[in-house]
Length: 483
Image (cartoon, rainbow, N blue to C red; front, top):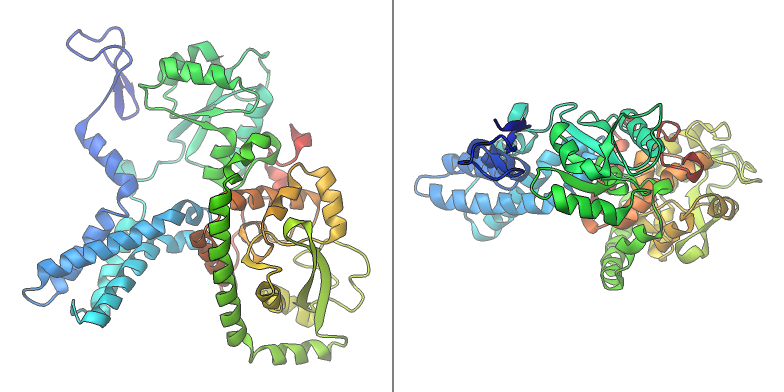
């Protein structure tokens, strides 16, 4: 009889002749529909639900036209929002807001059309009802039709026992409840006493995938790549299993790059000069417009902050040399948050730094001390979003200690960034290595949408308390010495 494989059927040698050939898969039709629909519900089901609500609320005779316009607008907004879906899911605050992003974009466009043309005739309450309906349908569905249950996605690691043990540690420390590492597939090395169980050798890959219901094969850096590809091509192309590299898994699940498990070939994703020039031009235009607008908004607040800082004694502004794009030094400006003379020697800053003044503690918590850096943005020395610039003394030491640290200087430093909102202050060499993992992730995935997401997360932290993320002390693949 066919052996069950998750929600599919794997045809084995004992299958009657009237069925498919051995190794082929069949999915029951309802599951095939749901498996296709679930990852696309934000651009199908959610817009359809919002369109039905608006059609029901539309004036008589306008139901069909309103439904068509609403569906097109909501689907377009969802298509724009899903470009940053992976990054939104990795942020503690914006992850909760993401289901509303597509409906908001779509209904904003629909409202603009209604304002300019007078059709469709919809009120604010109508749009609010459609927003709630579309956002509700865009959220992950529970149960068998929705997101994977804890431990329901099964991964097998192809590589050495040490790397497999570190992957298991990272999955556990990172709180990835959906993925479970069922074991390791050996590539000729000796078996280890500890760590994930060895499921078999690379030559048994097809049998291992079927017997252990493997959904994902994770290829480590020490695995023989061509041998893995040959075996996957020979035995797994007709099985419902996916092959990814270790770094891709970390980017997808955790939002950072395992710097100790990549080599120079990883940087081929950045070797596109045409895309780089286009992205830089758009980013610069957004930086100038955003910094100018922000300076206009905060201009009335700056004199008040300057007076409060001066009451503590000393100057209100603090300047320090930092390393920027291309390794070029520049002078960064901030509102002073520490005692005068506290910067006499290069020291790591931390959230509860004892050198902070009473007013400085408030400025640090609210990030108001960063406001003068808007001038650095207008001068082209910084961007609104990017890696945080470090002091030359730290950069010299970290470039000798951390592989690829100098690659973060390919980007213009930012007031906020992916590493800043996920890691906070570096505070140490290991903290800098941890932030480097996130800076490289941003270098690969940066876009205008991701920048907007980071800015929104940064603004949200001014109101809501930042939720904790993984700590570098509990995560493998950060330093090369951990190999």
